[in-house]
Length: 582
Image (cartoon, rainbow, N blue to C red):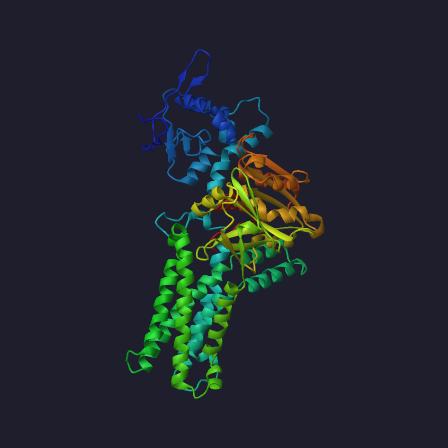
């Protein structure tokens, strides 16, 4: 017995179910009562109770049937999938494969359906029943909950982990080369210098995160469209570009390993004496270790804001220590500045400094009174008076300490206002909720300073240029970065079909966004307050095939984006989802 709204947890595995013949000749099953009680919920989840309200013809009276129930059932939710965790069989299945073979075959299910149904109707109902298992089976494999990775990120982040393979192989080769030549006091090539091997990965890790470099990467990806690459080749190349953060993280670990080797060698060269040179050499790998540990997904996910601040300032501190160490080594070994600058660690240290400093020097700063703020019930549009590229993101802050990544959308050029762009912000966290609440009070944000990077990095929607026909699914505030594509689809020579799923678009979001999208063809505004919540997995696949789309793009919250992407990818359709923490 539980109070209303409390979750019921089933701890049994099998129960005995008996059938009794009624006067009407229809067997009564205790499961029928459960199905009738939640029939409306089942219809919303594409299940038909008629497929389950008839017992198998071969089942006799008092025959034992295994009923396996797993997971939790939330009695307070009207949209809970009733049969998502129910397994019925005549015998207790020992494995999942045996269950699917016995309980989900078309022959077994067709015996339970009415004889008047056509073969086509039975097949469609069968597909709907098997849908829940297909969605759950879309993952490559399950990962234990105690690990630092989420199960739904395995397939969609596969290309993130693929970056580790070439980095690992390259490091094995470099270690072999260094191990055979590092005893030479005057190496012929810089590759054998352990200082180069220690500072080189730090430079590459910084370069991968540079905004201008990322625009060059996506420009190269766009050229695959003109080289006649197959759609699967274009998909994998685009996904590698989207998940280039895997190269950034692998280079960080590489820098940690080589700096440990360098610190050991420096301590030996100093005669096992602790001084400024050996001390700064050991401080670098210690800082890199803290940076790498803080970037683990289990810590980064739960303490994202703290991670961003810690990662930034520890990286700056590590760069300062690197510069100090390089200067100390040059003062000890070099006779002139020109000779010191010929060393590869010195050159790389200068390049790393430039890559780190210049984005913070060219920052936008504007007061709230000098920009347009359009507030709605559930979101706010902040319109900034400067240009922004299509398919980009920005880092926005109000205190120059805590920066938040937002999608930024360019607006058409206006003779009166000039170039403009806007950020659509929905209340999702403490910072966005506070900002949206203050935006509803006129004049409250007039003295608030907004900081934004002048160079905006590209986002995954740049991959739209690699396809001719694309279906886009977006939910909530994710519509903002896609507006330029659907408005200028003719100019961009891209055929786009878009569905925007949200609650009461006109009330929740600024009116000018709805006014832009409503007149457009192939754009559907799906209001969940007037229509039942759709199954986004099946809807995406059906609409993509109906539109004959070459690829699917999804902009939603992390869990929904990965969930739908895994299912769509299993259907053999190239899919791209909004990236988080990559």
